[in-house]
Image 1 (cartoon, rainbow, N blue to C red):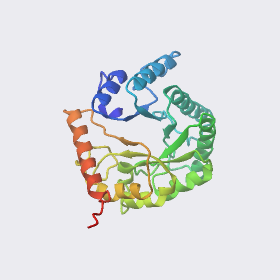
Image 2 (cartoon, rainbow, N blue to C red; image 1 turned 90 degrees about the vertical axis):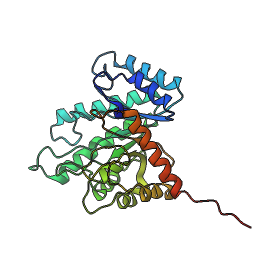
Image 3 (spheres, rainbow, N blue to C red; image 1 turned 180 degrees about the vertical axis):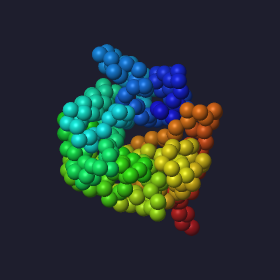
Image 4 (tube, one colour; image 1 turned 45 degrees about the horizontal axis):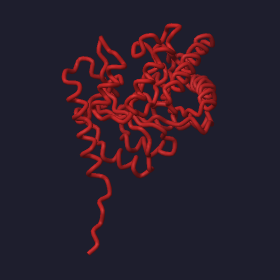
Length: 278
C-alpha cells in the first residue's frame, strides 16, 4: 500500500485503485500515517473500515507491524515495553482485517557502543513475546531482513536464521525482502534465499542498484530470474508483495504496471515448459 504514498493519501481510495488494477492481495501498514487514526482511541473504527473495503473487493491481506520510531532491540526496558505493545496492537489490527500474517522489523543497535550479541538477545525476547501473542490468534510472523547498515540486526542471512532458531516458535519465520538482500556486497539475493529458504513465510519484491531502496522492477540491477526460480523450487505459494517508494515519481500506476509486466515475463521464461510427446 505504501507504493502509492502521497500527501493526500487515503487508504480506502488506494484499496479501490489496487482492486481496479486487478491485484489479488495487498499489504497494509498498521501505523500512522497510513492509518490516520492509529494513535487515536477510536483507531479500531478505522481498521474496521479498511477491513470492510478489503472484503468488498475480496482481497487477501498481509499486515505490516508498526516500525516507525520503534526498536524491538532497545536496551531501555520502558521503551521496549511500548515497542512490543505497538506490534501487538498491529496483531490486533490483523485480526480485525482477517489477516493471518504480519511482517515485523527486527530492530537495530542503539549505538555501536552496545554489544551486538546482547542486543540480538533482547530482540529475540521481544519477538518471542510477539510471536506467542500472534500464535494465540493463529497469525504467523515474518521477520524481515533489513538493508545493509552497520547497526541493523538481521541484515545477513546467518544472523537472521540464528534469530529465527533462537526465537524457536513454529509461527515465526522470515519475510524475504529481495531489495534489502541486494544491498549486501558480494552476496546475490538468490544466495541469500538459499540460506533461509526453509523459513520463508512471505516475500517483498522490488528493484534497486544495491542501495537497499525500493524501485520499480526493471529500474535497478537485480536479476530476478534465479530468485523467482528459487522460490518455485521451494514450492513457495504465499503472497508476494510488490514494493516501491515512489513519492516523487510521476505516473505511479504506469510504473507499477511496468513492474508487473516484467515479473510476468520473468516467470514465463523460468516456468517449466510442457513436453510434447510424439
